[in-house]
Image (cartoon, rainbow, N blue to C red; front, side, top):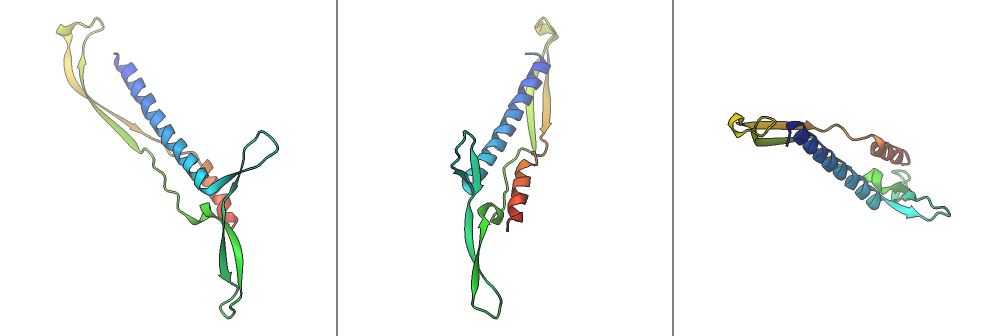
Length: 132
């Protein structure tokens, strides 16, 4: 296998792993904090799961009021993310014809750094926080 093909294959594998982690995180967030609402169309519509919280109206009064808050606004959302993937390989390098006499043995270190996730989920959380 040529070195550029190897690096490309490893890069694609890292991207797919990063994407799978992100997809699972979003799926888990929505399944825990949203419910599918019934619609008359073929579109899916989710609404936030709410929880009622009883708050005292004042410190001098025993009267209380109930406010409904999205559950997603009450919890932290730490998701697993790839920061850096480091791959160390022992390699044998030969010429294009596969000539064993020209073979060089060595080590190769490849480091992939992952970028930050898209801001979409953070914006959903900000919007939910604003509902409180």
